[in-house]
Amino acid sequence: MNEIRISDVTMKQTGPEISLSFKEKIELSKLLDKLGVSVIELEPIQQTKIDALRIKSVAAAVKNSIVAVPVALNEESVQITWNALKEAKKARLQVCAPVSPVQMEYLFHKKPDAMLAAIQDTIRACCRVCNDVEFVADDATRSDAAFLYSAVTAAIEAGAKTVTVCDTAGAMLPNEFTAFIRALYEGAPRLKEVCLGVACSDNLSMADACAIAAVRYGARELKAASYRLDTISLPNVARALSAKGDVYGVACRVHTTVMKRITGQIAWMCQTGRSKNSPFDNGVQEDDTGLFLTAHDDLSAVMKAASRLGYDLSEDDGVKVYDAFKVIAAKKEKVGAKELDAIVASAAMQVPPTYKLDSYVVTSGNTISATAHLKLHRHDKVLEGVSIGDGPIDAAFLAVEQITGQHYELDDFQIQAVTEGREAMGQTVVKLRSGSKVHSGRGISTDIVGASIHAYINALNKIVYEEENV
Image (tube, helix red, strand yellow):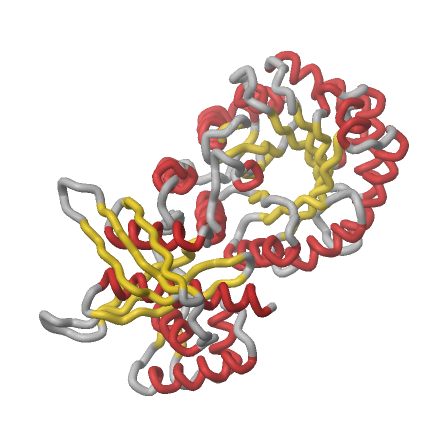
């Protein structure tokens, strides 16, 4: 039986309708890996430092699937992308190029001969660093047939092991798409030496049918989405292949028994309407880092653990965190991720406060919306913000955002009891992500809302200090 590989493109198609946080992308990658997809596709690198960290984090989280990242048509992009991807257990570089006259000349400003040369040169550069290289022919169904055959052949000669053709317009019916696939095999005989992949837009609601039809005529990889997008549906084609695989002599390793549960989790993360007006834009529900340290761990182990949690600590801050860690580790058998977050928040990068809390009034109840009215001091000026939220802490954080005019990704929010009894002290840790760096703040109070506000402002001050002193 031939294996049909499913290449998930959900994260590649994020946009205004799907806005995933940094942490959600890591969690989504883990879910897809558990689901059994063959390939997880990521967005290309645009902001080098931020996107490289995202790719490295996904590469470290994925255990079984191939992690694929596209490169631009130049050697510099190949090297930058590979430096971010090379630690993946299974890595793939994708060379995406338009092959239709409209996209080549009007979007890329290249003539056919120049495009062929760019494709070959980039694939060769990829092959020098990576064993798995894919050529993606964008808008293939609207290309000149002779040029498409030349491009496919040139890509294979340069070293591509997978060739994917895209019906970007989504204008083909299943019988037309299969005729296109047959003609492609005839026009580019060397295509039989590699894996043929297909991608289809769902413009006519025929993407799934076209994909299954392509499998019957030799396609061995399908670019599909685990969430509802304008492309092939992963749940639909996985179910179809599971039911009809024996008839076609093919098999798909996606775990259909857990598919409904996992795709449901993915849909929940992708449905950003739930957090449109909230700082709590993180859909990750569980902490499964498995991270813990003991008193026997040295400075380098603690620094490595902090890096896994997203912190980029300076040498001085690393020493401060390690000294604080030793005090805690002497009293506890294990120090986990939450304790390390609190240590970093209290010990690392303590800065002069740009914003100071003057006062806050929060109202909440089961018959009214939670409202927060905050006053902050900045440079001897009193700034006020009033906001409505889904709860008292949500409203308070939104009021801070209103005052500062900035929204930072809320990477994590923790509440811990530090004493017992009716007047117990509560500790909160807030982690805010600014670009590629995470900053954490800590607050302690008998009032958990107050502790949360102090923790948020503490983290915010670290970001502001770094931005103003770089």
